[in-house]
Length: 318
Image 1 (cartoon, helix red, strand yellow):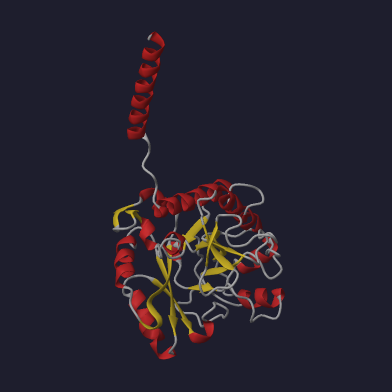
Image 2 (tube, rainbow, N blue to C red):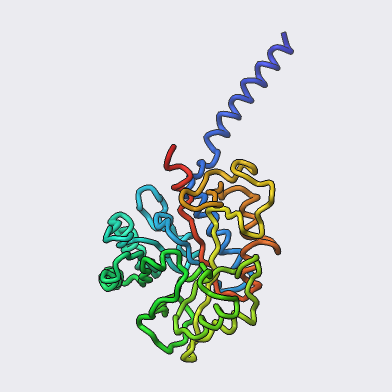
């Protein structure tokens, strides 16, 4: 009888403890919150290596808010971790198609961080309007024509200046060039970029065959043709894995490893990833072989984090 009573007491006590502990468990984080944490982690790591390192996430403007689903309450830790919001097709996606939802979000966020908008415009006659739509909201505009859909050309520059650029708040124009297929060689690309006067240049860390740019090469790019200093930022895809990158292993495929979660529609060889996976995050930052460490070692001023909106594309069909 005594043994039964003791067992009963233990069971009751255990259930009581379990019940109590459940009420004290932290709230499960949403996919958007996990992406916020990811970006913050990248920023903290990069800035520990290089103070003042620039972080620019592309798309996912909702992450600037505490509750990304409602756009309410600014997410201070996230805003402190980034230097600007980059977005694509805000007013033009071929034709004039203003995304009122994102425009409203970014107009509020502009009080905290600069906004950089890459607009895709099929008809060159609409370029002036795209620029005007951005500038009247104090957004920086990068208009790309139909022939520059894949960010492979150096377009004409606007608001050219000889100022020294040391922060994003000073940037008056920029170049987004991540496809180098139009350039005959690595040297040809460096030479053409050196001739420009863009305040900010975003390029890939690598030029073909996974060969990263060197600090000496980047020093060539950090001075505009007119003598002013500029920022040079490295593109890195943090929301999707790409089969042609150095980290991709021959036996990897969709679902193996399991964090390779979903095909990226419209982009062969790219897959949305479960970006909260420790394995994926270790590829991106936190160690001497990580992507961010390679960017810092190459001498870039910052990182352009693409596909932070992965939290949406992973779950939109569920």
